[in-house]
Image (cartoon, one colour):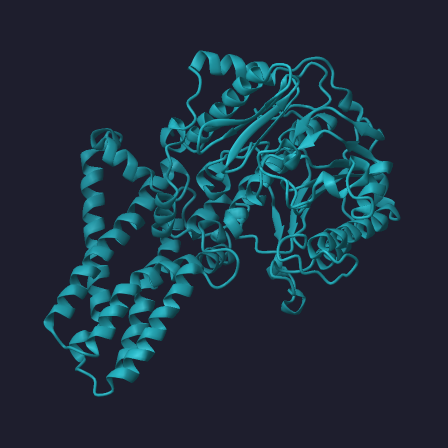
Length: 615
């Protein structure tokens, strides 16, 4: 039994070790190579990349583990032969990925993904056209030598030749089955809400260090699982018509009145609160519940409330990209899943960093959920605070820490002096299923959770108002996506997507309400316009205060996409390609604009990241 256990663990370690050791080699051989400036860079790459390495090793270990179980019952030569063939194939796969990752990085500046496979299968000649014959030959030799070395090493560790049929078959089988089952947890990344993804390796402001940490085999497999021909989806209009319709939606002119939204020439601290699942129906100021979001209602009455504002989609990963990058949600995918594409997205944080701001993202949950960490790093956040920054004793929610714990940390950090203006995003999580909160005011657990977060936000704002920094603070409050209350509004109703947007703070010069039609993608251009900063790299965003910009709100879920504009409302069912809502004076025009908008979105999605190959 001991010998089989030793073989199991030795083989697993041997499978993981080459990926761990490849990281210093990557840093040595890629641009700006050589020994890292500090040893912590190398340690960071190896430490943060380790979960991906262990995950891939778990996948690779699955078949050897089954063969080891079979060896308990038979000592047939076919076991050793099967192991050798498998290790040869696994070694070749790993060697190709490791070699290509280093070879292609100088050209792409991004970890290996499935793109080379697509290029090679579609046109081998074109895929090899940019490299010389000797480069191909050298690369092939290195790959074969590495593949042979890995296969030999793994086969030596997996020493079935030293085993004989066991006399305690049932016991040994049960133990090995349990160990093999544990591989699933290692491959998945544990039992938390998020599954293993390449974004978990991202830890630094330096992209190259993040890329060194990524396991290339994992990156390829993840990319293959998410491949989609975006450029072939939603082909409604010919190119000339699409361009003309989309351009008419985004034209702007005149001097935005929002340019006087804050004190002229000031660089206030900007705090953006992203509230989980809130909706207009929770606020009496927007015609909703009279005693639910009482604190938000008070804040809205004292600040600037946007009364005709829409969410982009139905989940946080979609909504965050719409808010922070002004990139509309997609009905068939989430761009946040693709680090190669999010690296090409604009970001409010990146623009503010260029203007001298520090950028921090606060979230009480798992920042690796749905590749969030890589997205945040890619779009300009230099610091991410998440569940692992809190003591285990405080992580009492399914999603991490409760909102009051999160805001206490934000409050304490904002209280520290800073000569640099700050952009802080705070993402709440308590008003998410299962709606379990340390608070009791409503019998309905869902509504009670919203009341809890509302009270936490109210306390945070009251404390901020009482501090000297309030006079130089702009506070922006918006939900992350369409509301989760009430539950009975269908996705095919525009009312489902109506959410609040509130501005407040001592730096704000305007109060009252704004009834201009807008959606989450418009926050970027509006905020940057108020600061006198350019927003030209946000092609889907429009300044809400621009007097000549056409008014529209676009939204989508996996079931529908729709638009609201001056001519009406239009919603299409994606699965059936049928119109499920068409209202207003000219709904066909609205439908045509929605189609042009969605088609442009997927054209853009298809080209994001392609610049890597063109370099």
